Length: 85
Image (cartoon, rainbow, N blue to C red; front, top):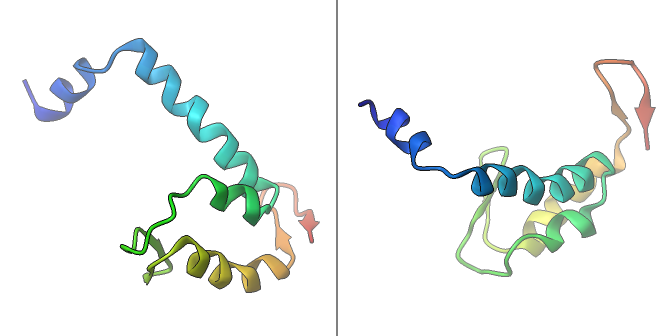
């Protein structure tokens, strides 16, 4: 049996439901452009677990600070052409 087939065969339905449920608030924070809510889900560490655009941020605070300029720019939805600020 291929590795991926074994991997997915080991997952139980509870896990398959839990992962999207846990990801939903993170996705909502990103869509709302709410950095405080987004970074609330990240562990406070100085080991460097966040990579953005190829640059390693050693702490969530560094990652949040590097995200602020992008958040200040309006975003444009490729689907409907609307923008948010």
